[in-house]
Amino acid sequence: MAERPPMVTLTEGAIARVKELISKSDEPVMGLRIGVSARGCSGLSYSVEYAQEQKRFEEIIDQD
Image (tube, rainbow, N blue to C red):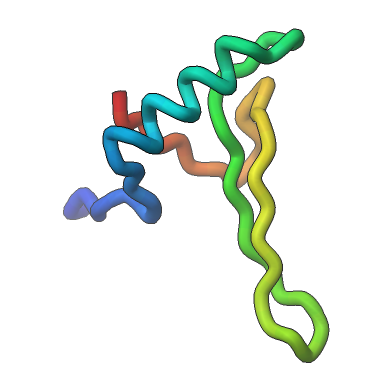
């Protein structure tokens, strides 16, 4: 099976900012969780949160 490109790519500046925010967290953080879900008639809802562990069906994208 051919390898597919990552669903999300971050700029160098975004990677630096995520690292900075993770380093300031009071809890252990393995990465950043980004989500998209359908919400009513207004379309899509986006979420961003710290991830302490990988959940079922999640894909890990490592850019560093």
